[in-house]
Each structure stands twice: as C-alpha cells, then as structure tokens.
Length: 133
Image (cartoon, rainbow, N blue to C red; front, side, top):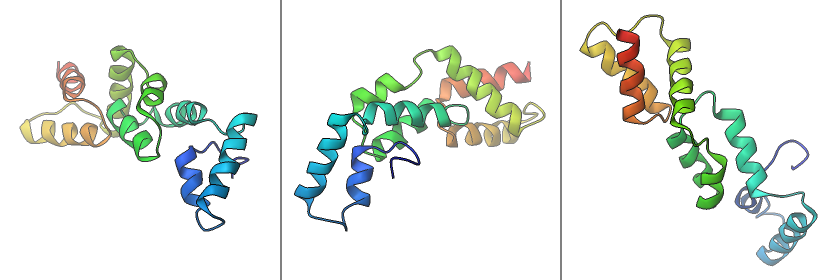
C-alpha cells in the first residue's frame, strides 16, 4: 500500500484490520515508522500539496483529521499565509466562474461554492468583492 502513495497510521490500521490482530498490526506499523517508511507528517504534507490548489485550509484540516492525523501535524502541514489562501480561492473561483456576481443570488451561489471548497467567509467576501469591482 505504501508503494502507491503515502498513508496515515490510522488509515493503514483501518485497512489492515481484517488481516491480523490489533497487536500484530500495531507492531508492524511501529516497525514501519521506525524504518521511516510510514510517517504521518509526510502523509500530511503530501495530502496538502496534492489538494491545496483546489480547496481551502478548513477543508484540508477537516480531511486530515478524518484520516487520523494529529492536530499539531495538521497545523504544520497547512499553508500559514492568508495571502496564499486568497490566491488559491481566487484561482478556484476563476476556474469555475467566468463573470463576477451580478446580483445577490449569484453572489450567494458563488459564495456557497467557495464555502463548499473549504474557504473561510472573510476570504470568500474578499475574493467576490474584488471581482465585482
């Protein structure tokens, strides 16, 4: 499994649950971590780099937590600059919409789209207001 892509420890535990006892699985995973073949930090970095262009930090944080990555590793893997998230939100908006919102309904529709991608409300407002201007 690790030859195809990085996995979190929790993912591998779940995937291997039918293949042995919990003690055996934990022993194998401990060995993989000691040899450097399994790393939640490396998984988080890989996950963020592959999805950051399409989704916001809130969505990345939620997805990483759902995959069993610890909060400190999630925080370390996420891009810290607000400017980068604004730029990513602007690019996601540009790929989906060809015109700025003309009325309230269109503004709400575009905002819901960006919100579903995990961008924060203040970033959505900045992106949509600058496109309207």
